[in-house]
Length: 393
Image 1: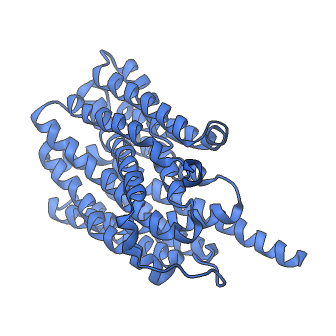
Image 2: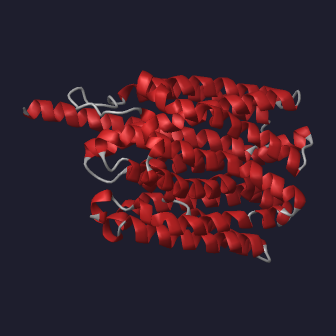
Image 3: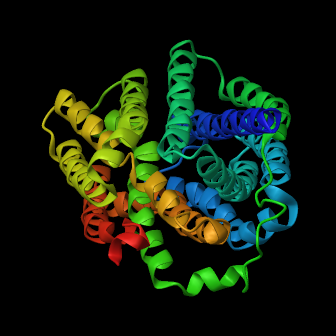
């Protein structure tokens, strides 16, 4: 019996590590692309509106993929799904890397493929994260997302060095693509089954979760935080460069600051959640994020904007992972609910940046970012939906 427990513990530990890897590599990919947006924009001579349309292709790929994600993960398991989507991401990144030398069309195709793969990959790894959290018996979901943020920090810092050294976009993104295609399929072999063999089946269909008011409200709150996170990822660097007249390197450093703040907050987040509860912590962080965004928008000089970036990153840190944990409060229904919440959230994460681009074409990018603060205020009001069901009794 002790041997069986040791074997099971080893499996859970392996699954936790593999899940961290999946999150970290996903973050590294997104940061590597986001950091090179200014150079791709200049190469293709895109204004804010046209750049928004190009970025929309990434979102469109995910929007097409997300309705399929729950079925794909249920049918093929999170392990096979994430491995397959990593290979598709490799193809998409290579299309972007070489395509930007030729014109807009190949970049559009590459972004669609990356978005499609990322949408399904994200649901798959969050389903595995919910399983690993339940088996580990402790609150670790925010730390998985800290792993994603750590990947984005690493990607942003590497990109800062790469940009400063003048490395071409084609070389940078091609190397990232090849590494993704090798590392992820091997690493996710340690994932555990999404459903225990002896687990009692749940009546109903996966689509039933889309009819649950609590699940949809959690999804709405997650969407707002994801919108803020996605806007920060794609527009902080460009806004620093264009709005505050800084260099490309300083713009990338501001982006890295945002990601580092988010990572640190996600790492210490479980302690705060255990001590104060989901609702007070998430609501307080929503206020912090609103203040940060407004400082970034209205700051008279770049150092004030950096303070805003720091608060923005801290404030948006726990919204998405806490939403995932809330969706997994009832283990037997976790997979379908996590799939729905993740799908809704990623609509905000991926559709937000293009919308900011459209607004920025009519106003300034800094003014367009006020919309982020408005949605974060709404997220603070919706935080009560994150309370575990048993707490409502």
